[in-house]
Image 1 (cartoon, rainbow, N blue to C red):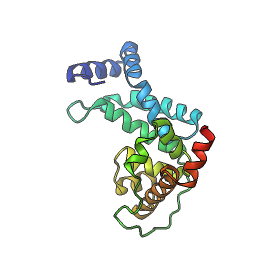
Image 2 (image 1 turned 180 degrees about the vertical axis):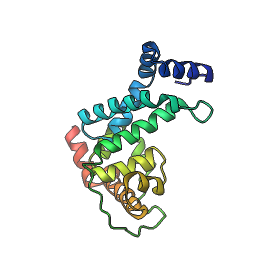
Image 3 (image 1 turned 60 degrees about the vertical axis):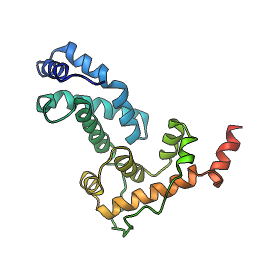
Image 4 (image 1 turned 90 degrees about the vertical axis):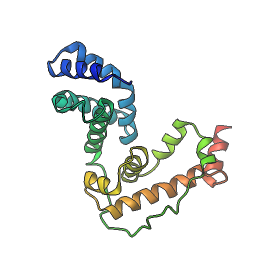
Length: 192
């Protein structure tokens, strides 16, 4: 998906001019990756598809704001998809607005060996068992690299609440993913 600057400029210019061929090329170029982004933020597949479609509508409506000198097209589209997904499920998110004092260091460590043994779908399935608010903070922080300040601004929560949700996500995922844990044993018995 690495487009040269010239290819990107041509594609963006075509979309600005409402060239259907350019719009279709942009859509096809990012379809699979951006649909996965929406699925990672919105637990319901139909809502994820809605977020995806709304996101692409926003991309086409604001493509004239994209500057090839300031960033990469894929990153710009991804950010729009993330924010659109969050906006769509924000109504359903029930964030605890109490600020928690969570230590800055990570008390909840998931061993790399546990993660290596799982496939992506298993990990995604485990992440989806988290409460929606906790899942969203985890995705923004771990998968997309947002800071707690950025997460707080985007979700209208305090930085402390964001830290609490991340710590809670890591604690719950550790319980699910660590070998020898009760849920890990239950999952292996089900697969047999």
